[in-house]
Structure formats: C-alpha cells, structure tokens
Amino acid sequence: KAGVTQTPRYLIKTRGQQVTLSCSPISGHRSVSWYQQTPGQGLQFLFEYFSETQRNKGNFPGRFSGRQFSNSRSEMNVSTLELGDSALYLCASSSNTGTDEKLFFGSGTQLSVL
Amino acid sequence: DAKTTQPPSMDCAEGRAANLPCNHSTISGNEYVYWYRQIHSQGPQYIIHGLKNNETNEMASLIITEDRKSSTLILPHATLRDTAVYYCIVSWGGKLIFGQGTELSVKP
Image 1: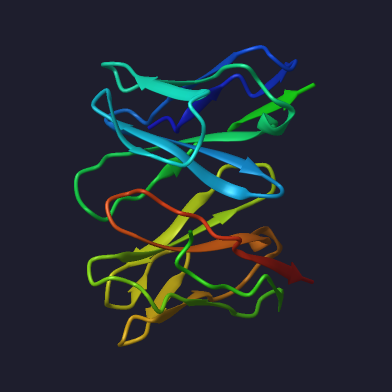
Image 2: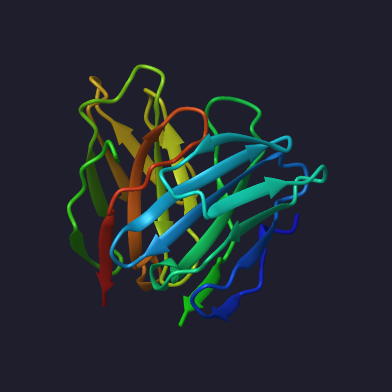
C-alpha cells in the first residue's frame, strides 16, 4: 500500500496570504488528522476528520480550517498567514476500526512564511 | 497537555539495548500507551502500543508496569539508525497529544 502523501513538500508564502495543504491517506483509511510542528511548541494537534466530519479540534485560531472529501482525502487551509505559522504540517491517517488506533504519518509540508 | 513525562535525552552504545522510560501516572483505565519516533525532518513513525500486557514486535518491546503508571520501551540492539526523538503517548480513540519526547542518540 502507498503511504500517506502530502503535497506540496515545501511552500513559501508571505504574511497575509492564504495557503492550502493537501493530504491523501492510506487507501481504506477513513480518519485524517493534522498536526503542526515547530521547534518551540513541538507537535500540536490541529484537527481530525472522519467521514467528512470534523471529530476533534485542537486549540488553534479560526484561521486554521480543514475539510475531508468523500474519498477521504483532506485539505487544510490557513488564512491571513502570520510569521508564526511557519512550521512543518503533518497529516496522519488511520483505519479507525477500534479504540486503539495507530496513526500513519506523511512526510509533511514545510511552510515558510516571510 | 501531554499526560506523560520522559527524560529529554539519552545516549546508548550501538549494539546495546536502549531502555526508554515513560511516566504516565494519571492514565485512565481505557487509555493505551503508544510509542512513536521521529527521525529528523520526517513524520513520526509508529513503533508499538499496549493496554495492560507487555508487547513485542519486530521493532521493539513495551513493558508496562502492573499499576500502568509507567512503561519502558526497549530497543534490543540499537543501531545508528535508531537515533531519533521517541514519544510516549497515552490516548484513547486515536487523538494523540505529543509531549517533548526523549532524544535518543546511538553512538558507535
């Protein structure tokens, strides 16, 4: 099976712009989660989608949003970019067949905001 | 906030066993203990998880104390490629809250 695919791998934006990141989960996986990783804050949970519905949400401002499509692919959007949004954004998928879920992570999108 | 406490860093000699401790004294009865690792600039990689019993797979062994308040990840024969940040997480239902992890350095 192909792993979790995230595109693009690298992205450079300027303050005030918006950005959309894409994630294709492992085939058959219905849950997609997003994480932000920065040197200062570490790995922080953004949100989780399951069957096109947001099921869990982390403590991030409304500028961060996401969605999931019927084929389980997911996108996350960040509007009005700030310098502090520079980070590695990671997507993870799981089959969500029970309560002990293993997450499989992609390689991430490295976003730089100038 | 993360519910686990790990030492920030550890060293291990190549070929020796690496024993990474984790404290999770507030773990709930239905929460699992997960271990992930992250090699620089890559996404975290699942290693192993367990509820009550000790677990072993091709990568590692997980030892959970009887009271479930702590656990140890064991890499039986560490190699240089095991150098990474190791995260211990307690969770139920798939939402993982990462702490700062343990930076393991395997040295020749």
